[in-house]
Length: 321
Image 1: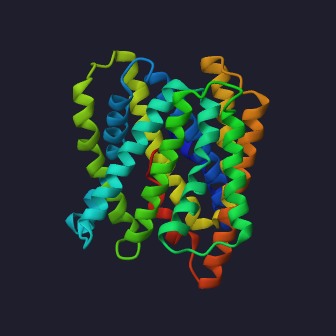
Image 2: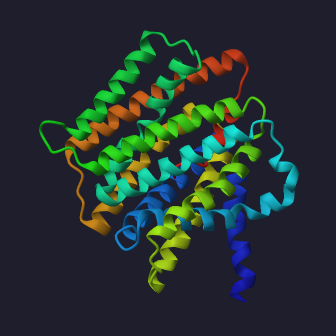
Image 3: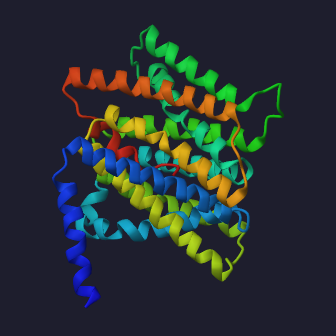
C-alpha cells in the first residue's frame, strides 16, 4: 500500500515546482546543487584522511561516469566527433591536475577555507580572458578582480599566519580550472557542450588511474559508500547546475552559490570540529562579491550581443568538483 501512495504524495510537490517561474525553478535547483557540492567536499575531506587523494579522484570519475553513461550511450559515437582533439586532451589534463590539487588541498585545509578560496576561479578566468582572449575590461571589472584577490589575502593572512600548503593548492586548483574554462570557451566555438563533457569524462578516468595505481590502497568496506557518494552526488550536482543555467540567468543564480560556504562551515563544524573565523567569512564575502560583479558584467555584455548564459556555462560545469 505504501508503495502506491508514495508517488501520489510527491505529485503536489512536482506540480508546485513546475508551476514556478523558470527563474524560481533555476534558483531552487541552484540551492540544491550547493548542498550537493558541500556534501561532496565533506565526503572528499573525510575519504582523503583514509585514502590517497589521487585514488579518491579516480573513484570520483569512475562513479561519475556511471551517472552519465546513459547519455553517452544514447548519443553514440557521433558524440565524439570533433576537429580539435588536442584541445580536448589539454582540457582533460588541466581538469585532472586541478582536481588533484583541489583534493589534496581539501585534505589539508579546513573545509570552509577551501570553499571560500575556490570562489577565486571566476577571478582567474576573467584575468586570463583579458590576457589571452583579448576581452576588453574597463576599470570597474579590473577593480573587482583586484578586490577579489585582496579578499583571498584576507583569508590567507600571509605574515600573520603561516601560509598552509593546502590553501595554496586550492588556489592553484582554481587557477588551473580557470585555464580549463578558457579552453572550454575556445572549444565551444565548434563543439557542443555534450561533446566537451563526453571527452573530459572519458579521458579523466585513465589519467587519474595511472597515478592512483602508484599509491593504491584497497578501500575498506565503509569507505565504498563515501566514494560512491562523491561520484554520484558530484555528477548529479553538475547536471543540476546545467539545468539551472538553462532556466535562469547566471546573475540570478550566482548569489545562491555563496550558500556553499554556509553549508561547508556547518558541515565542517559537525564532522571535523572546524569553526571558521571571522576573517574567513569576510574574505570569502569579498571574493564572492567580486566574482559576482564580474559575472554580472559579463551577463550584460552577453545580452548586448544576443548570447545566453547557458551557451557559455553549460559546458563548464564538469570541472574540478
